[in-house]
Image (cartoon, rainbow, N blue to C red; front, side, top):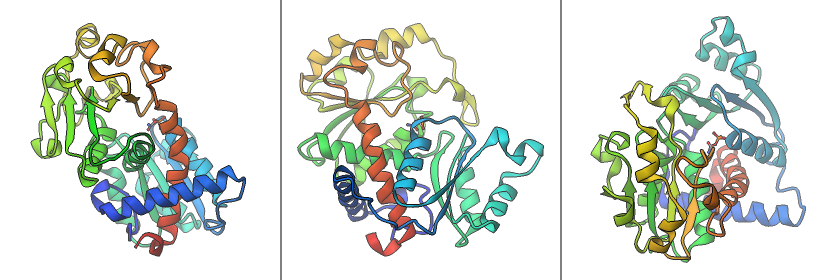
Length: 314
Ligand code: CP
């Protein structure tokens, strides 16, 4: 089973990920045939609690949940009673008391979604939609799913992850998921002050100093957003020079000749065009950034279905 909550990719087995991808394919086929996928969430009140900005994750969960027949309730921080001093734990307990049995939560504080899950226990199901610089498991699942549609085999995949590894919850989840799925060629490029200091989190990867030395032969370049809003957070303070970053780490069209024409470019969004990636590459033939977004919906439908009927991926 996926478990009561989905908080980290650490909870998943390889077989569960494969099953989620198969189920996402089924959701996609049904949607293409204009068949309502399932009324599996018909009696579910699903709360979207976003205490940090989001476009893709929030809308993707909302579309996925509505397609499955859920009653979707949106709570945004600015309109909630947390503004009157209520703790987040009290907010969540009150929502659960009102019958909201599935909560998708994003928060800027690393680890807080896990704490809330401990608090509610088995009374409701909680999905981590991104906790600070911690994890973003559903993004990693949609990325693995996208890769499975775009490359011949995950096992022989050669992937380069480029940018702000330190603050990227996407990278933290994705690296672990790639390793779980048997990917053995994971290359990392980042300035030293944006690299993870905990070597355990880089297990299964090879860190390169220079972008040009890491590019030859890669199938996928996965670019990360510079998370400047986290440059002074609980992890520490980063001294950062954007012009130096652009000079040494921005992906430019000239880099593609080193990787090969068949290379795919991924980015979880939102994209800082011209900073971590040049404008031309965002809309290039190599970019599968919008495919990632589209495939996020069937993957989230599969995730929500698995959480509401856990035997589906037992
Ligand atoms: N990838 C991602 O989490 O995007 P949002 O911040 O727009 O949800």
